[in-house]
Figure 1 (cartoon, rainbow, N blue to C red):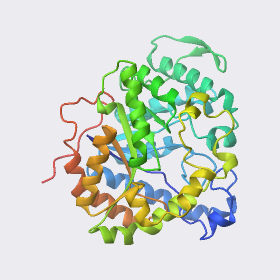
Figure 2: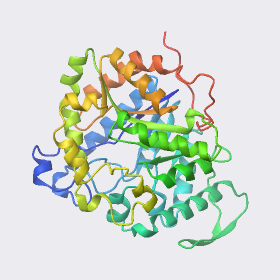
Figure 3: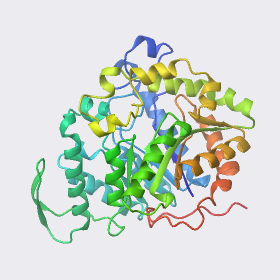
Figure 4: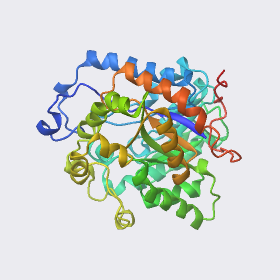
Length: 404
C-alpha cells in the first residue's frame, strides 16, 4: 500500500461572508482579496508541510494545477515539485498534473517533466488531467468541444517526445512541429509512470486502462459516495480484460487525526466547513461548460463536484454529517485506521492520497495531523495488498525507514 500526502495550497484568508457575498471562488474571484505577503507566507508553510510529510514516513507528495482561483494556489505545480526535489530525497513527487490541452506546444510539458525527473533522481510521477471546466474552458479559453481531442493529441506528442530516439516531425490537428527533439530526456525509462486524475468520466476509465496507466479518482464527496464510481472503473477494467491489480487505482480522501474523536471535531470542524463552503463555492455558470462532459458520461448520472446542485447538497451539512457520510475520515487514530481500511478495501485502491491540510487549517494543526497519521495510522495500512506489485511507482523513490 502506498500512502501519499495531497496538498491543494488553498488561500485561507477569504472573508467570513465570502460564500454569500461573492458568487465564485474560481475564474472571477476578486483579486483584491489576495494579499501577496500572506501568499508568500503560505507558500513556505505549505512546502514545510510537504517536506515534513516525507520525514513522517509518507511514500509520495502530491501537487496539482489550477488557475484563477483561491481554492488552490498552484497555477504551476512544476515549480512546487522543483522546490521539493531539492528539499526531499526519498518520496515520490506526484504532479497531478499538467493539463495537457492547455499547453502550446505540449512539448513544454515533456521538457519540464523530464527536468523534474532528472532533478529528483527519477522520483517523478507524471499526471495528465483533462482539467476542470473552470480552468480549461473559462480561465484558459479552450473550447469544450475540442478539449478532449486536444488532450489526446498532446498526450501522444509528449509520450513520443520521451520515447523516440531520433528527431521526428509531428503533424497533429492542433500542433505541427517540424523538429521534436527534447533535451533533457527523462531519467526513468521508457518514461516516468503516468497517473490520470479524473472525476468519474467513463471515457477516462477506458482510455486509462488501455494505456495501462493509474486512474486517480479525486472526489470531495468522500469514500462512501465513491463506491459507485470506483465500481464503474473496475467493471471497465474487467471488460477490457486487464488484471485487477489494486495499484491501478488511486483515491483522494480528506482525513483528520486527533487524540480522540471529540478532539478531532474541535481541531478540524471549522476548517472543513471553510473548505466546503468557501473553497468549493463555484458559480453554476463556471462549473461545467456545455460540451465539457460527454454524452456517455452524462448518461451515467455522475454528479459534478461543484456548481449549484453540489452547493445545495453541502450547504446544511454539519460536522456529524461530514463524518457519517464519509466526506472526511476523522477521529482518533483507531477510528481513522478502521475507516481507511474499509475505504481501501471497498474501493480496491493501492494508492491512497490523503488531504491533511484542509481549507483554513493552520500550519501547527496540519503538522499535528501529518505527525499523528504518520505515527499512528500509516504503519497499520502499509501491509494491505501484500503480494500485489506496484508497476506504476517511480524507480527513484525509496521507502521510509522502519519505525524504531
